[in-house]
Length: 284
Image 1 (cartoon, rainbow, N blue to C red):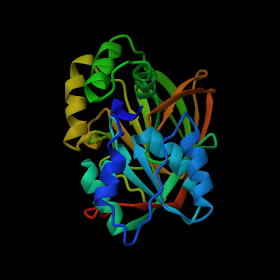
Image 2: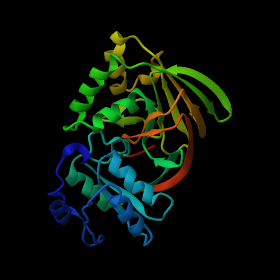
Image 3: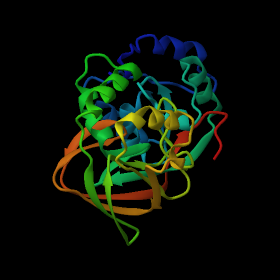
């Protein structure tokens, strides 16, 4: 379902552009939710490299099976946002992404867990988690649908109080949303934490404070020109171990995939735990 895009032509592109002298591919289409994780888990025990064809949700499902193993994760991006792929300089063009697999330029990056569940790009709660739930039920996918959902929901959304302990230090904040950033961006080159690194052993806790509705366009613009951290409505706190308490159970998202969890949330970084095949232009 990633990005609402058909992937039926991908095997032909793989056949045409993958270097058969060094790579012998096995192509499998998933049949249901969770199938990709099971396939990747089985393949990773034999140290095969696992290439996920899809968006951040598909990447999460596959990477959750590969993390901590000797297998490397590759990505052919097909999602609505492709946040991790973009951060790792993996081309959005499928042919060029296949050619990046041929080069096998690998890096080892950090991963993170929220209440024991893996995420690799971004987790969050508050408005972006609410929109992830709304977006998941839309018939159409893509950035335009996501943007329309955000605009229609922002008028009625209420900020919440969050009590946090970050590496032993206590913070209490009223926040429009909290983002826990491993990479710098949500996807579509919208950077909430422009200086985030996937190799520094830290998460960037991005506190988006309540702001006047008329400043929504400015906040959006800052995401795309990489100046979100310069806004007085954005506070970034870096840490390894993060506990969050909120008023009650509610939505969160893990790499854009929505779910509901309880009021108490525990997040930790797992440094340098995932091997990935990156684009040729990637550098930290």
